Image (tube, rainbow, N blue to C red; front, side, top):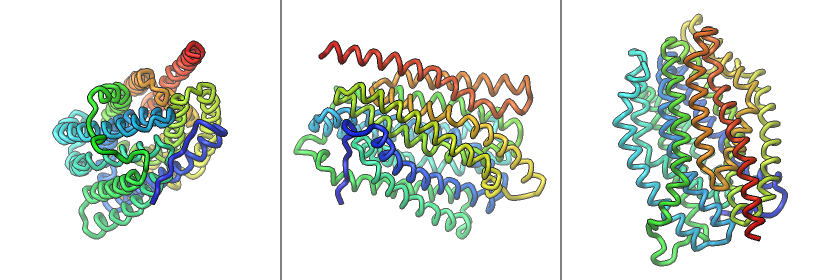
Length: 453
């Protein structure tokens, strides 16, 4: 089986971005499908407390996952630029060094996540009735960190070379596997929330193997004798690219942990309501995430080819497509959101009704302001694609400040209603930084190209 690469330095920017993003969207639909099934199985088979326990660990889980994604995507920015420049020897050197660096990162993150998991759950003010269940779920998830790192690196490598279809196939197969194992481990074997976690890790392992098989069939990445080695000088550049990327995700997650701390103080029903809504958050950002990957690859390849005007045209096309997509998804969530949320929750009728009201309120606020999130993904990804990972990191700091400030202060002024606005204000804070940074950076690039010419 041959894996197809894709050159994005010629042709219609809008068409290239859309065709690249569509397979990612389908893949993300399947990825969200199995997280939704996780939630439905846990919520219905194990009850509201189990749903709250899984949700209580969501931001901590995302902190670990997002750092893994940050390193993997950061390493592959250089891959996209090497590919766009046609420097295939350097491409192989970058890939080889990225593999070694990823293995080191996975080992460090594995040790830290398992050792700090329980103290952080305590620090988050996790209710006693769910802390043991949360730890059980996260322990299995964190034990699978090397598997998650492998999948994210291999998928990012394929996307950097323009192949978004293989990660799609991998995610479809892994998602279906995860759903079957969810039902088997939780409903038949009665392994509780740990069963759902095992199903997730096994699905990720299968995804990693499928992507690795595809990489082994890419001629450009076939190593000649002595090429598969660790390049110290190159590793410094890769770390410089990836560290702000990972740190940006880390600080966003810290803000989320503060939000979780505050929500935990409102009790199990609020935790369960936010958990249900956050599972649909993944559906809200499916296309945003996909456009983001497309924009990073597109911008990286065109920077490597020295085509700055194409980057600008592609950014405009991506922004328009993102905004329109966000409006469509937002309307769908407002219309069907309550029906979907009701599938996640079971138990006492009054508790179910209260949890559903909380979940739908939070979902509605996010749905209305969804274009703000989509523009964030587009502009952040373009900056990362052209090698600027510092300002996206600064935008993450803006998210952190806004998210923490709003979640701590707004409820004091307007009560529980203030809880629902932290995420929106975080998006707005990041957009201000990203928009201004993009225009400054593009003017600078154009001057540099004109001067070099």
